[in-house]
Length: 326
Length: 260
Image (cartoon, rainbow over all chains, first blue to last red; front, side):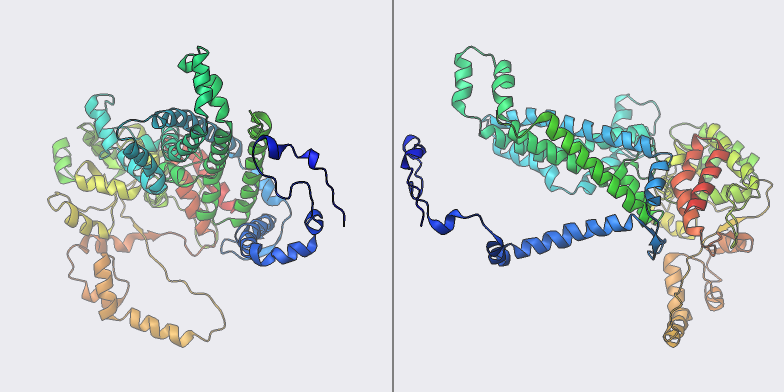
């Protein structure tokens, strides 16, 4: 039995008052690295979660990768392997590159706008003011409401002839035609309004994440900055913001993934527009499946989208280094 | 056809040819106040229906059970006429992205002069705006010859091993029997396809104008295996005719059909 008694190497216990279990004595069995037997022993506990992940995440993903190399008929019959022909079809689709560019624009603009507005909102909600509880609850509502419902409300508001937003703009005098303007009929304006709705529904989650981050900013650091003579702006940018690194990284990462994969907003807003001038990769996948019933091409497109989102996240982590300590 | 708007614009008789239609629609659009002469829904909901009305009305065709021929030059007069109507301002704004159901609501509100409708529309108007002064007239074609777009829902069956044939026969005998089929057709406002149904509903006034044009109905080539892809291609691409040249749009649709 080996016992290493280097009690002198545990000064931590003394200095910060946090007790170290067992002092310097290290017990035999607990010291060796966990091996196969431990894994087997832990299976009943991690088993259900493993099954869920394998069944709901890994298996469909594998099937999707497999389908992207097959020729599948309109009614779903697998007609054999075609290698990478589906990928060739995806990349030679004449509208693919504009759609790819538009997807990048969509993700960057929505996430940037959401984060900027949320930073401001979180600051406001951090201060104590009468009614703060109610305002905080109100901020949750766009998150709790169904995205389709929110988008439909805005969509019908933008309809010419009977939409309330159009009616308002006509009454105020910003639009000359009496029936209003077809915001959702033109690719550019429909896309712009989709960005507005996307920011609106992403605000609650991001605000609350940043709010949680703000709560961990120690008050004495801010006080120290004030005592050193830093104004509110300087305090915010040099003291508070760097401490929000962790919360911001969570918010941005999750937002990137969600916004990239977002379908309902664009489908509802740009659904009636012909052609592919307002599409992102996700709506293109959905159109391939729902309108043309081409599951094989859609699978190839999904694989491409998956790779793109991994690249975006990798680039973000590399460039911004969000996990680096302040 | 909204009688009140036609009267206001000074259109004497319902148009029967394309030239008369263009004339009447432009006059009605000139009334202003958000009123449009002809409601043209080329949005992705039912673009193929409006396309059929114009392309076939000009002597074109989508094809038949053997081949789909969307980019046939015979379709060009219809496609060009669509562009003419849009450019002359005779239609509502942004026809390329307007869906048919919302547009029909606007017609029922009384803001559109003329629009292609179907038998259930009669019930829709009676429910939502019974005061609307309207009439049902045949669709104008290039030269005035009679035409209507026949749309039918089909029951399709899969050929397996034939052991369910008796059950299927029994079901169809029941479904198409007069006392089951007629109330269903009446509730939907459709035209009956059975002889017994036609006898029972022969006196229906609201169906009379549709029954009159039925002999000249043309149907989609839905027995063609590529019809599903053609339908999807029209819905996804035809509305672009608002901004792109007509032949380009037809060629693009044909390309998507051939690829799918």
